[in-house]
Length: 267
Image (cartoon, rainbow, N blue to C red):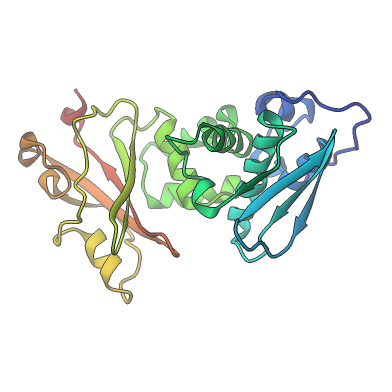
């Protein structure tokens, strides 16, 4: 059931937090997070149109504005893009912002404005109070649990996996993205994972991720499988441990792998 939202007369402050915004609307369930209705509530209209140099952009004057989004993106991607632009509306009002695909959902380490907008989007679409409650129904982070969580919050697998990694509920978890030519594009580990567990740039030919990346006829992995940690890490201690891996394709972005480290690797 979607939440019905009436138009505000008084404008929201520019720095309203996602939690405060959701509370003001009485939203307590993932299915009630209607991002387009929320955008309208804060004075923004959504327009889907062709954009030549970006995936989404926001323009505004005073307390009104328009978020333009590429209509060809996946619905989950469009939701995150709208929430990302809402982040700019909260933090960077008065500026005209155009965001490329690579700037949305990447949690940039160099562009603080884009990182702030990504964080706002994650907090709005997957608020911690609801998200951790749902995570606790899945003691193990695997592709099955990820798909359930992504469906519950209507977000992409990648965005949902980042949130699950950041939840601190899966202390041995790590995610790694690889592309065919670039190799390792980025990775993210739970805060409990020591920094010396740094994934290799290139995929090991023995890993399922390698096969999935280079063979288009192979389907996504249905279950986690064990592999020596030295297939993923150069750390000299890696040969002593066994970890689990499970990979899935992201159209146009290569392969993302969920790694679950041996518990002794984080002690």
